[in-house]
Length: 439
Image (tube, rainbow, N blue to C red; front, side, top):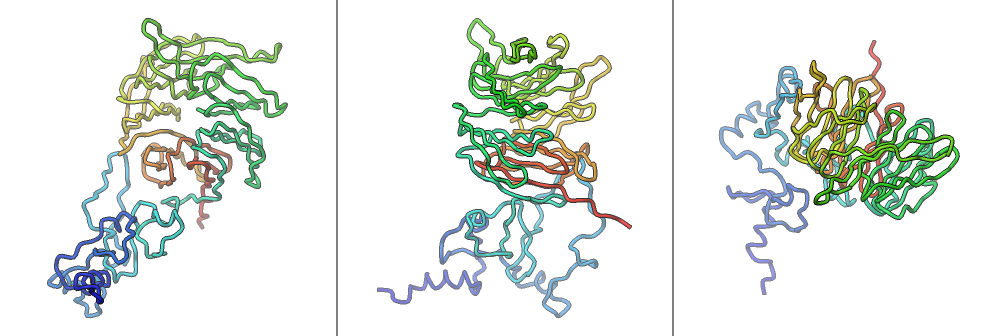
């Protein structure tokens, strides 16, 4: 029996303590990913220090043993480069890879898995983020939980002190906007595909129906007509439009967009029109410039006249599902699972064409626009890597990132710099910081 653990075990312990002088020390791959559970681990849990020689000697040439720094002691020289649309970050440098003896820890743009679980032992020395966001100018105010499955909608009706959330757990929840307490739960009998509010009305899309509530009178309506899940809704020209899952059947083309109009005399919603043209489910809708825009799983965007409800143009530049649409200024923005955001502008003949394409490394799920408290336009982009990226418009300069445990399918914009992001079974409340007064 090997009472002292054997030479191999001693070597592993020495490696952890950093006393092994072997030139072939390796850094633990799992530690770099924030997931190593071995103790002791046979690999290093720190980045290797510089080998002795000219590099090490030059770092201690001042005799103090401390590494040389730039003249301004900030780690940068010259002015920072503005990250415009054509900026490409250089990932082939060594920034952030510091030795164990450095007191400053450069963070990676990844949340520590152990911190999420509440058991990271590295504290401030952890090289992974102990925060749900990265960037300046905004902060998280609260995190509210309660649903059993992924959130698919967040709505804060104008002028109300209640916020509503819908989920794939087939429930609608109401929250007090002041206390953050859940004040009510409604079982819908189907997964929530989307939610919107318009004036006093709250609309919720579920399979084969649209539920409508008058938040003032508490009247409830069920709008029949959709076939399959309702993925998107929008109000325009006094009509409620819904994009549905209606599939194409051999020999027949099912309508993908249904429209209703409220009849004040009969106090009911009546079918008004069906817009045919898409060959696969419609998953995104937007209204702007007297036009209705629809994005579909068939990779296309269709432009409809709100007056005649006729299709004016079909845009086919995307190569995957068009997940979200947004109107900003005189532009239409579209995002897709093809990992691009396209910016469209009208030509002299009135047709839309792409004027700029922004590329991401992951598929995009949702676009929302808002202004920060300095009235600067900001674009919020939810991607299928569980991140929301924030960009200035129109430069696409990076403002920050928001992280979540699961895909963020729901984003809502509130008053006074507030915004909300779905996070698995709950949602987070964020707020832009007040601008710093200058003298």
